[in-house]
Length: 156
Image (cartoon, rainbow, N blue to C red):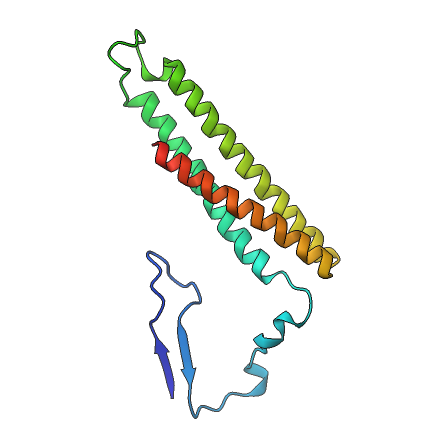
C-alpha cells in the first residue's frame, strides 16, 4: 500500500514536496518512475535553483521589513524627547541607520540579480564550470540575503 509519513516539521510551510512516502507492493508503471538518482550524474542546477528561490524569499522579507520600518517611523514613532526634532524621521541617527539598512537591501538585491543571471547563463551552456559558477553566485546571494533580512527585521 501507500504510506505517507508526516515527518516534515516546517513551520508555516505547505506543499514543500517534503516528507516521506513509501510504496509497498504497489505496481507503478516504469513511465511514472522518475529516476531521481540519475539527476546528479551530469551537471545540473537543481540545488542552485532551489537556493535561488530561498534567496529571493529572503530578499523579499528584507524589502518588506524595511518598508514596514519606514512606515512606522514616519507615521507612528515619536522623536526622542530631548532631540529637538518634531518627528522621529528627522533624527540624523535614524536617517543614518535607515541609510545603512537600505544599502544592505540594495546589496542583497544586486547579489540576487547576479545569481539569477549566473543561473540563466549556466542554463544556456550547462557544463561543470557553468554549474559551479551558478552555484557559487547563488550561495553568495543566499548567505547575504539571509543575513540582510535578519538585520533589517531585527532593526524594526
